[in-house]
Image (tube, rainbow, N blue to C red; front, side):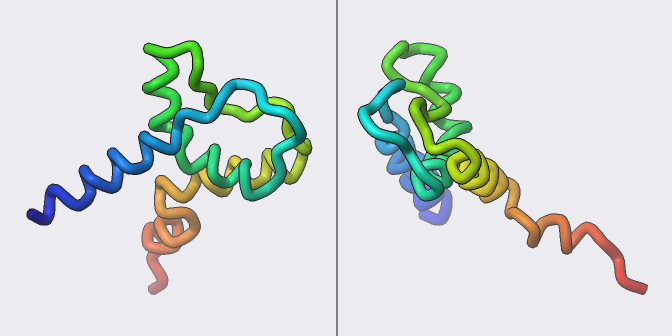
Amino acid sequence: MKRLIPFAALLLLTACATAPLAIEGSRGFFWGFFDGAVAPIAFIISWFSDQVGIYGVPNSGGWYDFGFLLGLTSWAGGGEAARRRRRWN
């Protein structure tokens, strides 16, 4: 049962990864964060579908990029993973 929960969460995220390649208006920080969080899943889906994009265009520039990078680092544990690697003696 414990293995089913991460699989179900991953399946739920793939449902969110079907953002169109171009939308009207610009995408800001929070869309960038969301797109970064689902980017690994969207990357795999984009191999098989031309309707799925990894990076939202048009976007608001720097804030979208910042959110995208934060979303990508959420997969690796963000700053918490880097903090654990350091040893304080």
